Every structure is written in C-alpha cells, then in structure tokens.
Amino acid sequence: MKKVNVFESNSFDAKSMKRLLVHDSPYFKVLNFNFKAGQELPVHSHDIEGEVSLTVLEGEGEFLGKDGISIPARTGDVLICPISEPHGVKAKSDLRILVTIAPPI
Figure 1 (cartoon, rainbow, N blue to C red):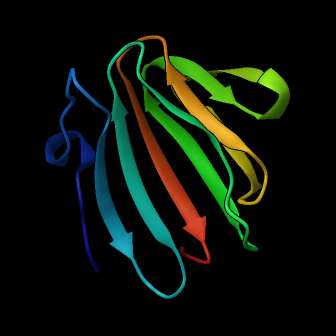
Figure 2: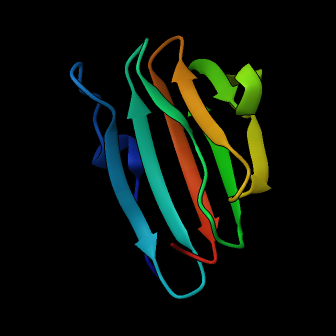
C-alpha cells in the first residue's frame, strides 16, 4: 500500500502549473496538477488507446476540448474520455486536478 496526500505534497506556483507524479505502474498512472488562476494545460491528445480521467479536487475552471469546447469544472467534477480525444484544462481560480491514465503512458 501507498498513501500520498496531494494537498501536502504539491504546491502552487505563480509561474507555471505544478505537476506531481503520485503513482506509476504497468496498470495506471496518477498525477496531480495544480494551476494558479489563469494557468492552463492546452488542448492536446495522445495517439494511443486508453482512457484518462480528470477529477477536480479543489477550485473552479474549465475542461477544454476540440473546436473550442469548454465545460465548467468545479470541485467534485470528473471528466472521463478516451486519451486520444483532445482534452485540456483552464483554471478560473486556484485549481487542483487529479488525473488517472489507464493504461499508463
């Protein structure tokens, strides 16, 4: 077993989003991304099979998609999609996201 508290292990940075690798195994990867208000992870995709989930642990922002799609994202919201589908995130307030990727990349 392994326990990680992302609230204690990862901070926020005014210059760029902060990334913490929480877990990496042959079965899935878990990452924590922290964004200050206004920061974003641009829309991107991965040319592989698998799925990604983005869970908002704290704050408000937007889940981004292809063709300018924007879906409100706030504490408790979970976005799940194929990892090959374009996805991104933009923070309206300080935003803490937990990302899982299966299988890991």
